[in-house]
Image (cartoon, rainbow, N blue to C red; front, side):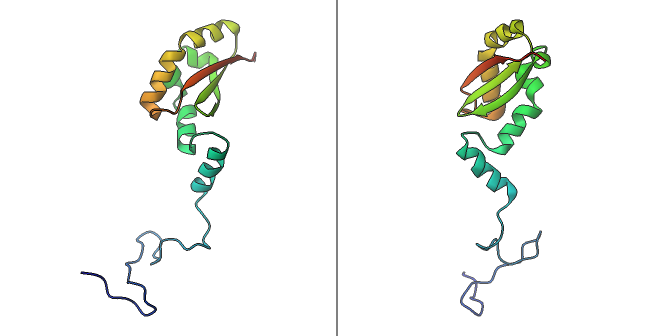
Length: 124
């Protein structure tokens, strides 16, 4: 059974329980910030904001201890996770653990998010 049309020809809709409005979103309404941010990030070759936040918030789980104490994620663009370490010895360790890091990222973030790990040294 279809809903009877309202005056003006549009079918009746129950009000949104959060906003109290009967319309979802009009074209002139501003877009939510998350949607706009995700479009910008996609244009830069980065994953959505939720994935980037997960990389930084869960870095100690993804990298594992003690690597997480000496390495930080710097960027994630087009599937390449760039990791910055504080010493050349930790760069060697990070490169050694790159396959494990990619596997953990696939498990935690989803397939295709991290395809490669690039390691750079920046002394503190």
